[in-house]
Length: 349
Image (cartoon, rainbow, N blue to C red; front, side):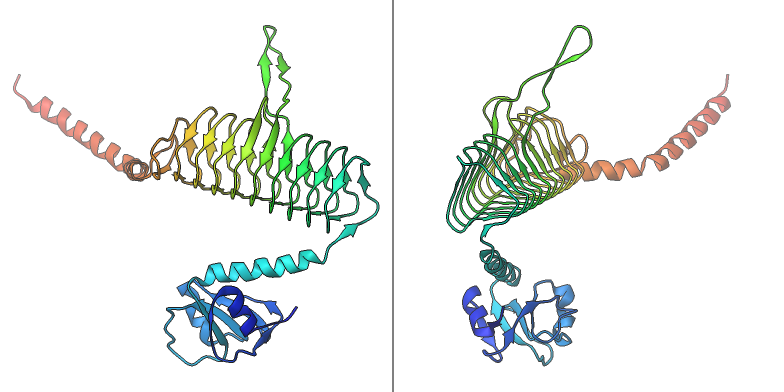
């Protein structure tokens, strides 16, 4: 694929500084790019590379002040990082549009319905009464169980498993190895010490514009639905338990676990390896630091939390400082105890 600086500037609402007919055919990091590639500069740490890069075209912030002459053509935009993301998305979509049709061998049930321009890769399985929207891509080895609904412009990558009755919205991306709708962890303790399985008869609902990373698992509800709301972004290797609800525009980093029936508000940010107990509520806009352990409701809308058990992030940092001081404090206490003992011995009887 080939684009000119003029075409790219139109796509990202930018202004050109240099030759508008400059052409690029691929992308490259600013420190490694070669002639014919497009790069971007958003982080000031990489600014020196702007003057040495061999990239033909570089997207930069509109307020960037040049310190030296450069050879690349520039496209100036309000936010270089977002503009570059827009270009990558456009490029990816153009590639995806080339994939259409049904590869063999694959299984598509006679009662399944497929929209226009759908792609089904080899060894994919599409069960009874499945409904798949227009321009959706099902990559090789995916398993779509009966009564699943998948919207338009959605991408199901290789090896994804979607259990029965789950609902996937429009413009969703689910990466390889993810499992949607497996049984929630429900077992009733018995008098003899054994555990009786509680059937999980609900489903999972994933709303529009959600992206789910590789090898993430989202359990079906015991009853009702586990719900991932519009615009949520999930990293790889996340566990979401039965009946959890995740509010719109929430982002969660890898290796986080959320226990059953916990409700997350909108625009929450959760760092990697955080753990959240069950039956809790987390307020809108909360930020949870990586490796935090949440054991109670977090009601402070827009506040930051850290540590275990999770508390106000500033208080958590203070506690860490005091913890590091404990060995020195112990030493001082022992010295004071020794001094006190000596003073007691010197007191007149």
